[in-house]
Length: 329
Image 1 (spheres, one colour):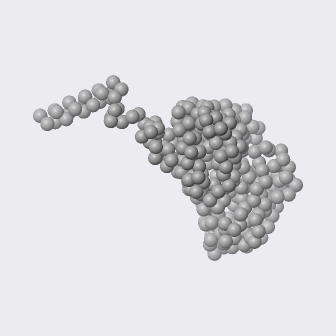
Image 2 (tube, rainbow, N blue to C red):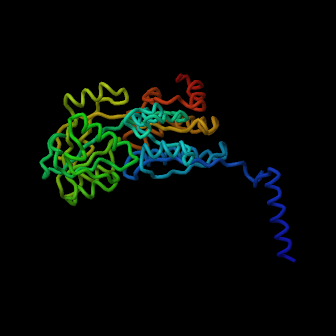
Image 3 (tube, rainbow, N blue to C red):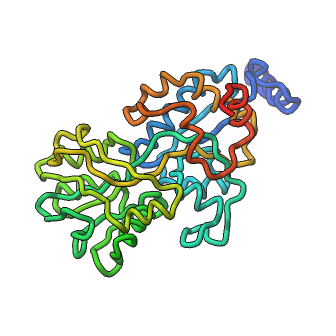
């Protein structure tokens, strides 16, 4: 009899859901969104985590539940957003540009991702090259013949490292022993002597470079500069001059900031994601701006106005609604 009663309750409960009731109304409908980030030693992962934490704290108000996924990086995130596997993703500004316009030479050449939408930009990222002192690498040209990690397929920094090498006339397939592994694995391999150097485009300070410079193997940050790099920056609007702040890495042998170039990390979505969801996330980040800046040292330079710069794809209407309300547009 008890079993029959429980079965009847279960059937009635299920029937109520079919009629549109929710638990606790049957609880308000919850929209689940996933944020694609990058490797766990970079800045993308904690960035996604910070945004998810903010929106989840207001779950009852917005009816949104956000989760974070560690991914292969920018290109992976763009493709996953376009496929509907992610609702949001952190994407380098150069990769956002290349994807939206289908830039020649990128994996989206001739196939522009016109449904890609920008939400806001975040922190600046520097194309960073670290090498073991024992390798004798002092300039980018010294990479010839060396074991160098360029970055994993699907990452933004793989394209940045290729751009760097092309700018100085180095062919990665013929002039060096190129590796294509994830950034999280590179510091250990450098310390073990299985790599001579590795590239990583990241906001500073970075856990990967803290690890790389904290071991027994002495490590130096290598300047990425010269006429070829100047021309690269000049001819690509998404690139800008930058530097590696060596005071963040006391284990490195450098005694002054190291010149390089860089991009911005941006927060992207699809035109198919609802205005309400994008508005809620944008509002929470900007109205908790001071707390957001404290979540990672790379955010220290952020300004609200600056977070609308470096965006190539159209701004999502949900984000634009908030920006207009806040007087930022």
